[in-house]
Image 1 (cartoon, one colour):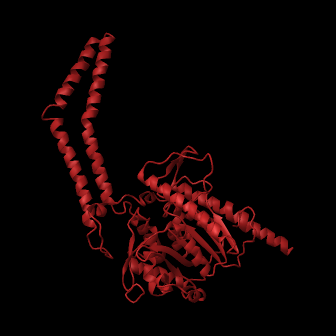
Image 2 (cartoon, one colour):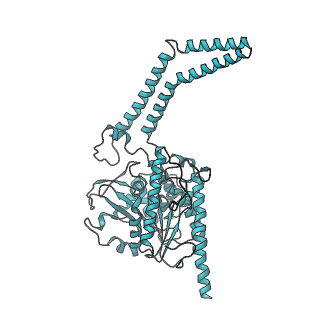
Image 3 (cartoon, rainbow, N blue to C red):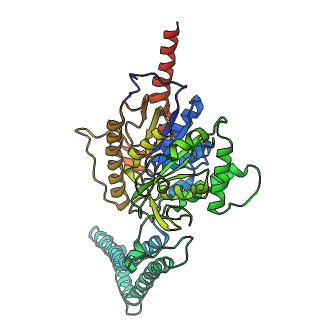
Amino acid sequence: MITPESPDRLYSTRLRTALVLTGTGTAGAYHAGVLRALHEAGIRIDLVAARGVGVVGAMFAAMDGGARLWDDKGVWRSASARRYYRWRPALRAAGWAGVAAVAILAIPLVLLIVAALIALVGMLLTFVGITSVGAAANALYSSWIESLFAPTALPTIIPRLAVVALLLALTSALAGVIASFLPKRARRRARYGPIGRMLGGPLASNALADRCAQELWNLIRGAATLALPQAKELAQRYVELVSENLGQPGFRELLLAVHDMDARRDLIFALLSPNQRARFFNRPGNDPPRAAEAFDLIGTAREHAFDACAGALAVPVASEPHLITFAPEGPWRGETHRLCDRPGALVRLLEEVAAAGAEQVIIVSAAPPQGRPYELESERGDVRGHAAEALAAFESAGLRDVLEQWTGRFAGLFLIRPVHNPLGPLDFDGVYDERSDRTHTLAELVDRGYEDGYRQFIEPVVAASGDRLETVQR
């Protein structure tokens, strides 16, 4: 692998360059910071490829809209970023109702503790000689106990309130089950039981997908005051804008990878220049043929651009897969399939990047280097944190395998990654870091990506390559 400290080959602006964004969840904030650094430095990028949350940065970078990612009111710095990948609404409502029931049941215990403290104060006052005040405290204690635990008071009210809270929790859970039966944009038969329909994928990825669609539409419509169209129409408008401007400054080719759970294969959605399309889509394939896994966004698959985005944002198991309905005349004969991300798809993505003619590749990942001795941290006990730890470990290990496999297969393979990143893929509210003894936020991860873009690539690689070329010419 080419390291920033001593690249064994020069970075060249004459070579076809691909930017590969890989990661899950909060990694999109790191991508945004790196994209800002590359944009400011004027780094030439011919192709943007992505998997996972990288599709967000890739779709904006393909149409020179990266500022919508890193601005203060953009996708990753705004206050709405805290709502990405939240618990599904039915689960949130049921959870808060359950918490309310527990709190109601705890009221008598809390009141007993308060009454006991009042009695203790009365005893202390009596002991030190303040008899009148101590007697008043004891009288207050006795009156509290009698009034609070009278047959018509707490013993009657508390059970009723707890039952109401539990009924609200049950109603919220049933609402989630009923909602799973309502008509959707694309329906599939499901063999879920009631518990499976209620829980399903506990996290919702639609908030991030909806925000990306809105921001992309703001770029497409410009100053016109038009309402956000349906996903298919928006995808067509997006593809038309990018394809018509390929070759213009700021517009780049696009390649997205997402996993088809039903076909058990990765799907590639590509928007390439005319001189690359024929060779890319006519590669020999197995059964089913290449057309069953590689889709030309400039052709009939243009309406699936946001299906690819929504599918890539669906975290396996943690969130519901995205449903895509293929065209009846296509290889999948109008079937509806389930799409999600696959953390190990980076290997496949690089294969497709090479098939698209890339000669040098810049990989951007928010996964820090693999651990070393004396770096153990406390295990996270919350559900989201536990899942985030597993995802981060898979990302880091998978990146290592990719670098080992692809070293020497491109004229240049460059990597931009943080030295230390305490934020897990699902830590959108920030997280406390034991090593630095402080809380790290999502906005700080954007800044770290910006700094790493300069420190790890622009200054040591691009600038060093320019200095060496100038020396050779002299």
